[in-house]
Amino acid sequence: MSVPEPPTQAVRPSVLDPAIAARLRRDEAGLVAAIVREHGTGDVLMMAWMDDEALHRTLTTGRATYWSRSRQEYWVKGQTSGHHQYVKGVSLDCDGDAVLVTVEQVGAACHTGNHTCFFDELPVRTGVPT
Image (cartoon, rainbow, N blue to C red):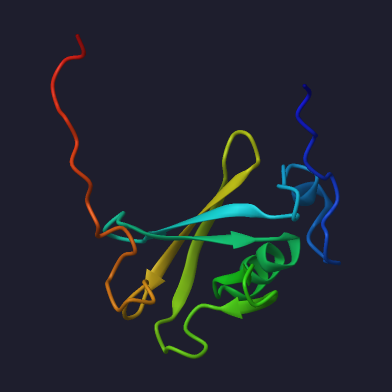
């Protein structure tokens, strides 16, 4: 059974630079994963989704903008919470299916009020595999 190729075009219209858009490998909904890390500490803060337009807005405004899958709308981090993300850099991964957004975080990144969304550590069995 063959796996369908991801869409080559965005699902929602965008003015993202065509050279950047051509490098993205989107999922079936036209999205790429956005991993967010904090400038200065390197802490991984959260993961969200971007489409071409969210990436365009992030690159051109310096404010982290994402696509909400549940609300089916764009959201600028901090617009309602006051916990803003000021973009310091954006990198595309080698496969083009994720972006790394480096931000100056003001307040908590997680909707739970935690600094990072990755606070629930799971037990890991350590040692050399047998």
